[in-house]
Amino acid sequence: MDTIQYILSPREAQEAEQKWRIVKRSVDARQRELRVHLTILTDDKGHPIAKDAPIPLYEPPVFQDVHHAKRSVIIIGCGPAGLFAALALLEHGIKPIIYERGKEVSERKKDIALLNRNEGLNPESNYCYGEGGAGTFSDGKLFSRSKKRGNMQRVMELFHYFGAPDTVLYEAHAHIGSDKLPGIIKRMRECIIEHGGEIHFGCRVDSLRELKVESLKFKDTPIILAIGHSAHDTYRMLAQEGVAMETKGFAMGVRAEHPQELINRLMYHLVENRKSKDESIIDFVGNASYSMVTQVDGRGVYSFCMCPGGHIVPAGSSEGSCVVNGMSASHRNSPYANSGMVVQILPEDIPGEDPLRGLAFQEALERLAFEHGIEPNIAPAQRMRDFVEGRASKDLPACSYLPGIVPSRLDEWLPAHIGKRLQQGFRDFDRKYPGFLTNDAVIVGVESRSSSPVRIIRDPETLQSINTPNLYPCGEGAGYAGGITSSALDGINAALWIAGE
Ligand SMILES: Cc1cc2nc3c(=O)[nH]c(=O)nc-3n(C[C@H](O)[C@H](O)[C@H](O)COP(=O)(O)OP(=O)(O)OC[C@H]3O[C@@H](n4cnc5c(N)ncnc54)[C@H](O)[C@@H]3O)c2cc1C
Image (tube, rainbow, N blue to C red; front, side, top):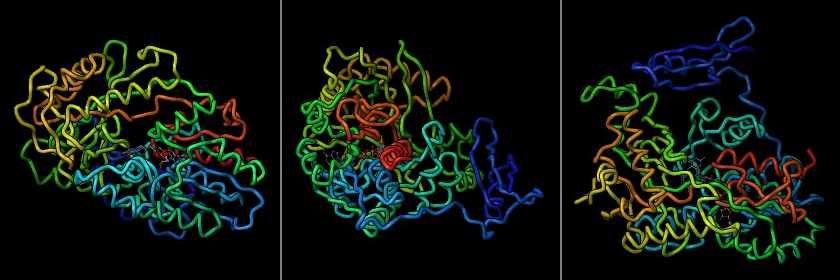
């Protein structure tokens, strides 16, 4: 087998994709005319392989029956890191036992519906906590294809095996969507249980020591710690129990939302009011996304987790705080384009020595945003140009954030080292994409959970905590991964080390 590469118009690419086996696809929007880069599988003579040829897409996983397995591993947290660790353990004949503080996905959905209707936050079942972790009700972007930390393609294959669309196998910027993810996560759970693994929902681990007492009954069972980065209470418990941690750099800011049609125009170089051609392009390549980055006063300012055709969501996990994030459904077809717009924060930006001081810093900003919103979840917001030019917004544009937004002076109350840098960042982005800085866009506060401010220090080779034997911190909460795919891969790596591979 070999491959051949083509650079095609969207229409040609669409036709090719219906006929041939695609192994890579990316959209190039840098030129005035959109181009699609396609890599097609060929036979040894260079003939393209038909889409439905009887050649397996990949080697399917083989999960072993672990009902009576000799070895078991405890996993704390059922996000991508915990779930993929469990699947990898099953492949190696080891029984995973997962403890998850939140609920299973269908029950969790009901709590999320209440949250979106502004009818209250369940602190144990929300956008952060519950089956599938923070990845379940997300855009489901599966970006990172870095080979550095292992086999990313295997993560994509497992998502596909459990029901993700074929595009996750070849699309450069694949995504699944929050309407499809719950079903995929449910099938992963069913597979784990069917093969003899255990998942205990509504089980928050409040003491590692006590859990270790239990684990001793299983002959010193290893513990994979996959808690994500929102569980501040769990970090504090770990600190109290002496697990080695340190502060790490992270990022905070706001979520910006534009009309999607404006972003399509800027990114795809479309002409205003020329609808018919534009619609056919967008039908195939989808609504446009963007990625922005600049440097302001020695710190990065960048877009984060951009959700074309998406929604802004209330992503906090505790009362009295206002946290936003973004998600989209598989078709990415809402009229809004949102993205985190964040400023890099380095450990030296937060005074003190406490390894958990980044958490306190996040919490303070989330409380401030809550105070400038309206209880329980109406978020403070400002038109983008008003924010940059230091003016109050008399009113706000329509916004996808279901609980609602209220005008607020983010330009005044955001800490200057974040607010001023964001203002300059938006000016820089507008220089690159004139029209980006507009009062048709709104910024909503605050985007504070883009990455973990803490690292649970582990040995680079054995992946074990440097001072707590048999504890394997992994995923985003451990500070070694960011996003769904790299967290999933980190979970797999922990499992493989334990399995002895
Ligand atoms: C709204 C939203 C949209 C996002 N969109 C994307 C995206 O499009 N693409 C992308 O790559 N990333 C996205 N992310 C980030 C992504 O979801 C995370 O990077 C990823 O889920 C991290 O995986 P994890 O397994 O390390 O942790 P998590 O997914 O956070 O899972 C940790 C789990 O541990 C549980 N837990 C915590 N403490 C305890 C305890 N003491 N006892 C028992 N259980 C506990 C939690 O309930 C949670 O279920 C998004 C996040 C959010 C909130």
